[in-house]
Length: 158
Image 1 (spheres, one colour):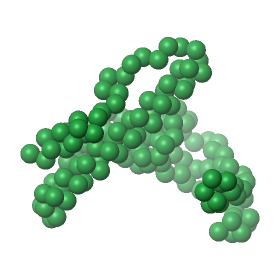
Image 2 (cartoon, one colour):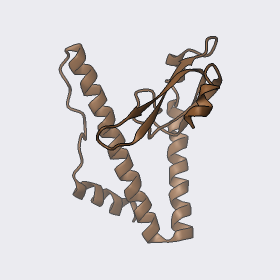
Image 3 (cartoon, one colour):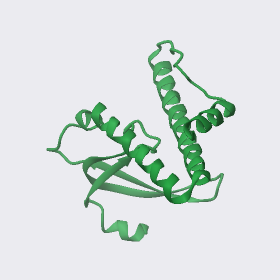
């Protein structure tokens, strides 16, 4: 794959970001089109811990597009409402087509996903606050125990 990138430096690519991405630029829900970027360089990095190679792309946002601060404001509140409706519909379809057991498993996976993303975002905020020298504020519902997650899943399944 990296050999084909040699001829792709300078090529423009479109970037989509998903809500599960551990990045400060990730949307809070769904998938967002972030614009056109140019590949500036690439490299391979070897992880000493895992022995795996990782491809690192350096990309640059192409000028003349909607400003990034406007793009990162998406999704808007109405779009978040739409996302919640979509997830409810998705859950209803899973329950109808695959049964209650699969539905509960889907709900559990969604709850774990929300917790993981929430913890990552709180960690990112804490790092930013520590870097700026401000005092961190305790966040409402910071960490949930496994029992609280399980109770939430069982409640949602009723």
